[in-house]
Length: 601
Image (cartoon, rainbow, N blue to C red; front, side, top):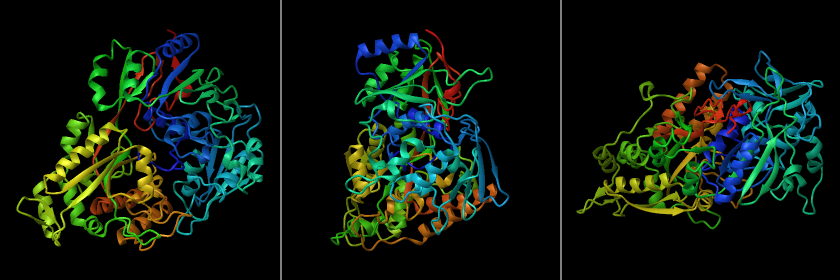
């Protein structure tokens, strides 16, 4: 994923974070002696050893904007509700029940009795009210979670109040269909630890909360309410988490859950070492890349693991053009005006879509382990619109691509090189992140496919952070990107598709606090998507919502701000000694971590 907002809440906080954990488990244990020690420890207590690609950026959830940090925070926190990783249905978590008023504008949650924080202090309704009123809805705290709680065209927010010692009430100013999932899924924070940081400032006048629970904090002082609590953090090496003795869940016999006592997240960035480490037995699971599948499948029985296939991953992969016509504070256009005219010509984008041989991309780069993608929603999403239902598709047709270009005034010279009506050769730069081998290969094929219709493409390979910086600065022409799935709720992608969204990358509007930009234009079809997203959250009938988001998908495919490519299969290899795996693309391998067991070795 190129960067969905930290606040893009998926239906279950625990499920989301563990799915994210799986998505980033790409690394190996770098020191042989360390791996041997971990195996020795595993024989003594039930533990799970996995890995993450990067150090945590913070232990403060509302300030987190890193998928890799989510892998840790998802084990430390939970919300009022959770989501079944198989059915997608909401289930009780900190709240044992909830009641929705007939007008669908009021939800009352009833907390379980005897809830506690990981330091043993009581978890109460006051914590819930504090979490929303004082943190997530606090204008002085830059959290992406606040964005998704914004309701309707007015941008108003829900209100939260304490009903009694166990009940808390959320009220929205108008019907807001995703609100149950959002209010239920957002992690609850400890008021007894954090309230003082909200009420006091540092010497610069900033809330102390903004510097609380950084990665220099003693891990054992970070208080949560999830399945685990941190025992230690060694930068550049690992995070060790142990079972939270105050976690609320117990099995039918009254035994505390989770059963796995310790989680070890190794921090290492080498994908090659990841594969070596898993094959040597030092990791308990791995996300299987297409190029690794055949080798790992051959060793499946001997290696005592199972490769699970959850079907197409949630999320999207695409190439996008920078459609922004604006200029910076110095009056310099973000995109060369000549190229901007090309990119903003619909026939140009459609021609590119027809030129791409996505079947070859699927069969070679992804080893046949994926499906062609024609929508911003994955095919397993209940709101997905299929081609049979009216979703436009662009199958490989180079001749059709050339016809579209010529109809839009482009011409071919004697050497079959494409130029615009003014004689400017069509040449642009395609940006791609270096760490993702599959995306680099996709960029190479895109270059080949577009050169076959006369375009010249220069591939620019940069680190992930450098790509993000260029996207935020609007300093790019075309890029290979992707977004992780936001769960089952289409509105989770509003920060991508809303014209005012912080991830509206193909035509990024002004950011709060940045130098002014001039000449930014919002197209009619972007405004129509804005209207559909507003209508979609106000509509409570699921069938009608499906029609609304179906029209959104049609517009995206008609206008092609992103040209969708291939959605790979969700594949994970998990050691057979881990019992109870119920793998799905929605929930991953560990959505039901609380009931998994590790067989003694």
